[in-house]
Length: 196
Image 1 (cartoon, rainbow, N blue to C red):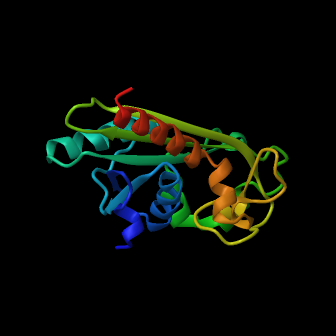
Image 2 (image 1 turned 180 degrees about the vertical axis):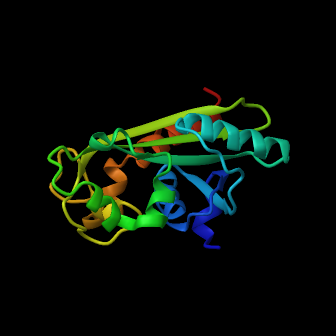
């Protein structure tokens, strides 16, 4: 493990099996002097339309296993013309039909508005569950553009003319749904450490 990952003044565990997600979060938290260590494995398989409920359930499972302190994160992609689909099932849908499958569902559809929502849940021995949310509106592109991971090559954030997949990591981390949630989390962690 890179020294940078756990050498921050504040150190927390990130429970995730997604290395790309870990890399994004690590870069943002590092700006705040927070180091993270990745703990792999999904704490729970939760079926729900509510991302906050999924995160809360995962945290409870980890608490019961005496894991922590740390945080979990879940993200959903809500496409307006598909009535919010795939929502919390975004990763499952991506695995099953991929980007081309999602674009096929939108073939000929004019309304391509979508929203990404990220929920972070943090806990420790002294703090009850804290929830942090980040959202961003945007459009689904008509074709795959750029590289990136997950839905990055088809999501164009509002106010931009390129997809996440066409952005460098630093640029994406300035505007993304995940960065908004992570930055709120980081600011809270720093204040907590300072005793405010």
